[in-house]
Amino acid sequence: MAQAPDTPTGDAAAVAAFLDAIAHPTRRADAQALDTLFREVTGWQPRLWNGSILGYGRYGYRYDSGRAGEFLATGFSPRKANISLYIMPGYRDHGAILDRLGKHRTGAACVYINKLADIDMDALADLVRAGLSDLARTWPVTPGQPIS
Image 1: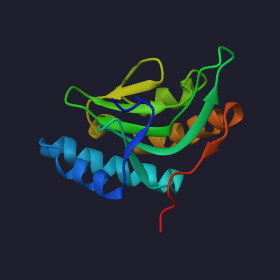
Image 2: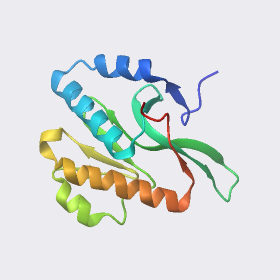
Image 3: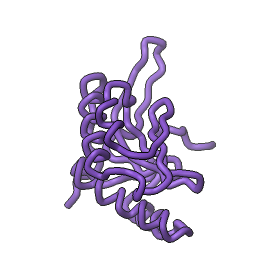
Image 4: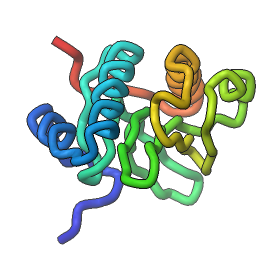
């Protein structure tokens, strides 16, 4: 049976192997720098979700429809076309931060960047913090594994 899309699939060793396996050297360096930033901002170790997303923390949700589950609280995926930044539950109220971020595109709960050289890392740290704060007002956020 296939794993549910909102289930973490890997521990610290899987995260390290995933980062090391990124073929393009710039994308790999960007992913490692993002991992450092997300660890510093959240204080949490990442888990690998769906085989390609590094997630920091998690939250449980239950909609009025009865659908429930868990998903990463924040994170990123270093995809070939671009880097997807997961800002839950979205970035709708963070226009001022996005204005400082630099070159990016937005989706439903993702911010897409081409490379770290295109963005302001301080603005990204602020965006991650703001997203976690917003998320915690809606759903209970629990840390992933604490950084030891």
